[in-house]
Image 1 (cartoon, rainbow, N blue to C red):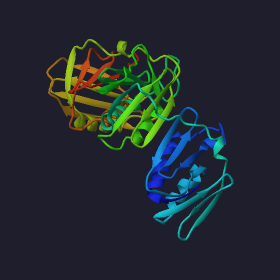
Image 2 (image 1 turned 135 degrees about the horizontal axis):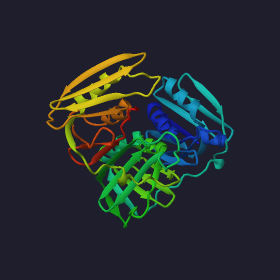
Image 3 (image 1 turned 45 degrees about the vertical axis):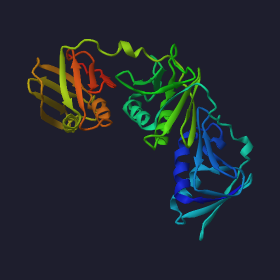
Image 4 (image 1 turned 60 degrees about the vertical axis):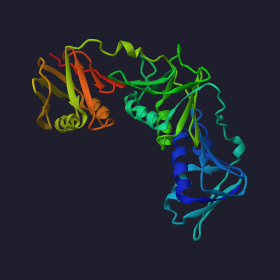
Length: 373
């Protein structure tokens, strides 16, 4: 294959596709990209056997169609450091050569036939939604996934529920839970009713990075063990997380003795200020005291010192004291509009707290830190 490529466009495409390359030593070829160059288009493929992507590369002039394996790390370094606006890539089973006006880089090649296939999207049953809506839903939930597999369920990914005209995403790590809803259109009777498909966090990150245009339509098809997602430029494939997702409906509090109105921006600022004096060596804790017309936040660390922050409130109910790890609040608050309004629902200082946005399409549950006697 031989093609003349726009350097910046190819760099962006390689960086995006590289999210799906293998980080573990499974097969050496999985750390590379496969390029499929046809007369009318160029496609990059990447996979770690768990997730995969087919990505269209634009601004490519094809001189000789064909297929080739491209070393991901070296190619990205070349594209990042090169000064030419356009570069020629000529590759075969033995070598891969990248040429500019004044530079030339030669790397070993591999047989493209050994690269695993990434399926194409040919589904008749799927849900369709706008990229802007889906991107916002991912931002509001993916941060709450567990970093490592847990004993109590499939929490290293995001649960998808697609029924009729609605999509619901849920994520939890056992200490907090994020749930968001958005509009989606079903085609061919597609539904996840009776299933609990969980898409891995890595696949969610890859998908989010592909959602650039607000009004672009995205098609999502969930099968028993895998998911296929099609955007205008890409097709993303992923296996689902094994295991059972916890029953999130039982986690969401149904009772509240206090409903406290908050504005995201000022509340976020107050939490970050109080958290400055939490101690990194011990469990981080900020004590929140909700009283009439005022919220007081206090933190104390044996080595770091003490903080005391006050925030005016439009609240006239009973006084409630509750402690949180500030990380679990700031990670939620930073994905919301600073001007947005939230309602915090509390029963008492020992039970999970529920945050709801004013439009009703986002809920966030946090388990408080219990003070040991």
